[in-house]
Amino acid sequence: MKRASVLAFTLLLVALGLCGCSDNANHKASGKSGASTTSSRPSQAPKAAHATVRLVWSHVGKSFGDAQVWYVARVDNRAPTLASVALNVRALDASRAIVGSSQVTLPNVPGQSNFDYFGYLGGPPSDTNLTGTPVKIDVSEAHNAFGQAGAVEMPMLRTSEITLALGSEDTNTNAPYSYDLTAKVTNDISREVDGGVTQQVVLYDSAGHVVGGDTGTSDNAPDSLPTGMSYREQWTGIPALHHAVRAVYSVWVG
Image (cartoon, rainbow, N blue to C red; front, side, top):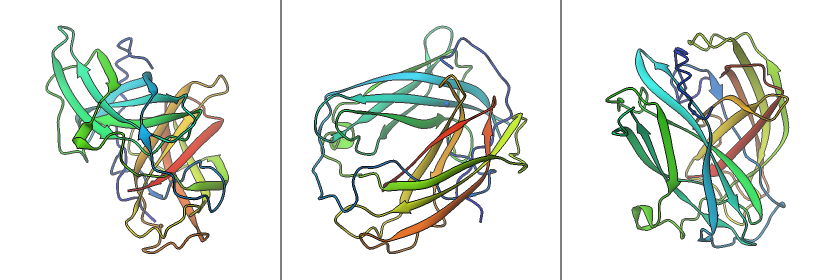
């Protein structure tokens, strides 16, 4: 099955000294899934974030001929409870003028854990364009974004049986690597999931560096997923700039 949203970028590797970047409409996928905690865990209200956020990777390329930036922001939640975190993301040109921006609310990050969020700025399917050439990506916590940050319930679901394999799918980019992924997703929260899910995969090399990834909605998630039930996901044509040996696959409600 084809993913609803797919990253398409023509890797114009503008190695702009960017740290080393989201949804696209040309990679085929049916799913993504997420790391979580124990099965059938009780619902836990997220707390205001006492977390740190930082950019760990970004890449400038092309999506359907338009400039697009991929980025990975790492959230470190040192508190013992779930955190609800929102981000301000800005692409800056050489004069430090903003040429693209977004504000996003992340899934609830479990206590005393890290979470790498994969996002993008500009290019289809976002229907927004960068207005200049970015040379720096700035990521910071957005306090009270949408009047909700610190109070949003967007729990991650449990994933297992994740496999990553070198694929042959055309990513519709000039990325040198294409990967396929399968996973099992289980509803381990205390309520039925019936409003759709968001998902992502982040790819890493043998040294632990981000080398690619993707994000989007799922066309494999059932319309109704009761507590304790699972479904299978498949994803093909995940682009990577370098050889990947590990995938972290996450899915959350919302």
